[in-house]
Length: 328
Image (cartoon, rainbow, N blue to C red; front, side, top):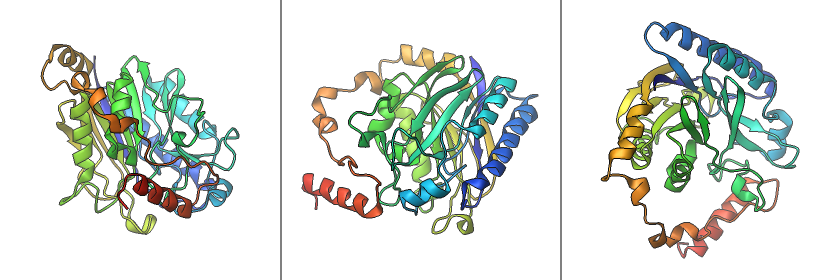
């Protein structure tokens, strides 16, 4: 199967209340239709991925303030609009993140994204590695009895799709688990800021997108926030949204810099699957020697077992993890 994926970059100012969400959903809905219809003579766009912070930002506040001003249930009235578009166009939409309030987890907010297809909502992903100390939302890791799979992968008509959010991508174990759960395409929903973003000398954005694609033999569709400094101080957001193939080749990329941008690139599942079957070399998923890597089974960052989470509590957990690792 050959189709095209679109990494859809937004440029919104930081919202102050949830009342600003409808205008964002309206604009992203327009971007979906414009991309699918506008590219139709050239490319069959079936997968559209939006960035972190697209609906609400998960940082620089207390949990109580975030729940009061910005958090919403997920799914919600806004995701219903995406469902209608997915059904209308037969496409798959990886929503930008919502700040989620779930009644089953009082005094907690999650940073969440949905994969939506023609049949409706297919999966919810909650950020496993919040960008601590600033982000005070919870991780599924914080709950010993968390009732859902933290790394859902959905088998769809356009391939097996997983997702991870922003800082998750700096943890090879997180992306490897998604790949081991069967993913052929992993979406990156991100707000990756300067100076680590899409420009030299660091350019961690491109570095990790390419590395995670190559080491897991997966396509990566990476949508980054393109907001200006004045919209999200104290950071600027360099965009650079891209699509990377299973050998780490950048198939398409937006020029770095703020602003709305959409880039599209081909996803060829037949080639991916043939390469996975044929290769005996550079098949890192098959060659992985789990038994010789005991670090992966050793706890490091303590669970946030007291809620609501605070920046001070995050700093205390970081220090405790350092002490356990004898790295203080």
